[in-house]
Structures are given as C-alpha cells and as structure tokens.
Length: 164
Image 1: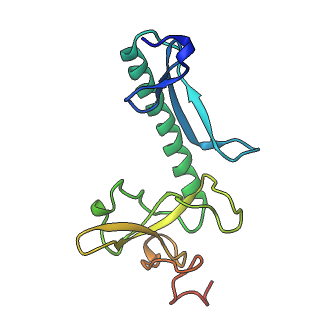
Image 2: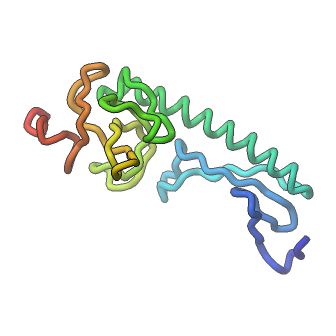
C-alpha cells in the first residue's frame, strides 16, 4: 500500500481512491450545488480493504441511480413535453424508430445557460450507416401524438417551428 506522503492514488476500479484508506465516490446528478451547479459528491466510509470499498461503492451507486431515476420519472410526468412518454433505452440501437422517449438532458438548457437536471424529449436518429444516436426531439404534441422529428436550433423541428 502507498504511504500517506505519496498523496491520493486512484484505483483502476472507477470511483475509488486511496489516501490512507480506500474511499468510494459517486456523483448525484439530480442534486446540484447552488453555487457551482456541479453534481453533489457522495462518498462511502473509508475502508482498509479495497474489495469492501468496491462493494460499498457499488451499493452507493445503485442507491444514487435509483434516486435519480425516481426524480427523473416524477419530473417527466409533470412536464407537458415529456408526459406519457417511455424512458429511453440506454443504447440508441435498442430504441425503436418513430418513437419519442424521455431521458435525462445531455446539454445545458437554452434559457438557463448552465446544465441542470431535467427531463428532455429524445428521438432516435442515424449516426452513420450502421449506428444510431439520440437527438433532442421536437416538443410538438403530447404522449402518443408527439412529433417524431428531431428539433433543429431550438425546441421544434422545421415542420413545427412556427406552431410553437
């Protein structure tokens, strides 16, 4: 084990570091700090055994992800543009064509200027001949009547840009 004078050494397992004791780190994206707007850092207790730290970090990550999923679902049900939509699959390749999904926003909000935790509408678009990606979906329509086109320079597709 490294000595304390060597400082912090990061483990090959994501989210763990050594500084006299192994400590797990997980970031809660649904809870951002008011001053910096960065995700809140959640840590495990210090462990002398790396395996115990890995297990504790896995458990903490599952708790944080469950909290994020619950907050995102509640937020999606409140917003008009994401209400009654299914949660997007983790991979765009698993998503169906011509289906609108909701998910956690990838980019900063246009009005706020900084990234915040919020639900956003997504559609599957081709990234290349054999691959797919997610793009922000047009906000026209609700639920099953939602527009299946990608939004371009704003919140709407070219077909609905004047509808608002």
